[in-house]
Image (cartoon, rainbow, N blue to C red; front, side, top):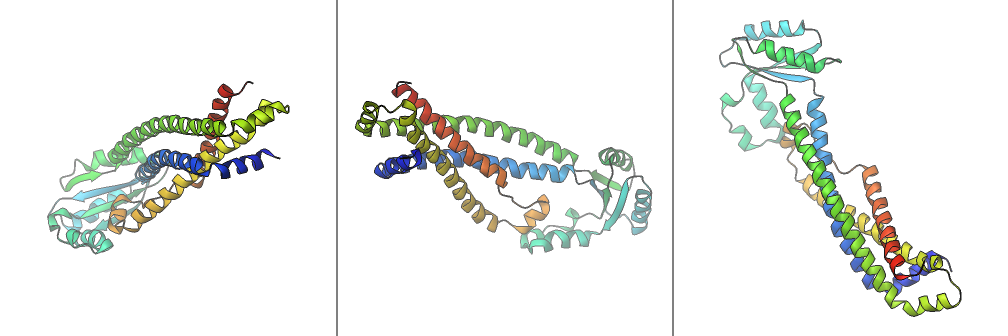
Length: 289
C-alpha cells in the first residue's frame, strides 16, 4: 500500500482530529494572508503615487483666466512636461462629487475647489523636473500651492515598511502555530495507531516506511489549512470590495486588489512544507531513526 493510500485511510479513521487541525492552521494563515493583503494594496498605492509624474498647481482665489493661460504656456515650454490641463473650480467639484454622486461631497464649499493646472511630466528625470517646478512655481504670486504627491508616496513607503515588519512577525507566529498544531495532531494520531505501528515494526518495516503516511498527512493539513484561509479571505474581500465607494477609489487612484496568484500559491506550498516538517520533526522524537 502506498503512503498516500495509508495516509488517506488514517485520515478517514481520525477525521475529526484532522478537521480540528486544519481549522486551527486556517485561522493562523488567515491572519498572515490578511496582513499580506494590506501590504499588497498599500504597495499598489505607493507605486501609483510614486509614478504619477503629476503635479497639481493650485491658483489663488480671484486669479484670472489670462494669468492661468500665461502660467500654462510657461509650463508647456518646460522640458519634460507633456501636458497641462486647466481645471476650473466648477470642473473640480464635478469631477469629485460627480464620481459617486455623494451628497456629502456635493455640500463642500466652493473654497475647497480652487482652480488648478494639472501638469503631466514624463521622462527619466520626471521627479527632478517636478521638484524644480515646485520650487519655481512657489515663488509666483498667483500660485497658492503646488502638490507633487512625493510626500504622500514617502508616507506610504513608511507605512509599507511597517506592514512588511508586521507581516514578518505574523509569519513567525504562523510558523510556530502550524508546527505546534500539526505536531500535536501527528503525535495523537501516532498514539491511536500505536498497535499498527508496532505490527509494522515487527514485520520488518523501516522507520522511513512508517513515517511517510504521517508526513503526507501533515503536509495535507498545512496545505488545506492555507487554502481554506485564502478562500475565506477571498470571500471577505469580495464583500468589502463590493461596498467600496467609487469616489474613494477616485481619490486614492487605485481600487482594492486581492493577493496575486503567485502569493496564494506560495502560501499553500508554505503550509504544506511546514506541515510536513512539523510531522517529520515530531515523528523523529517518537520513532527510532
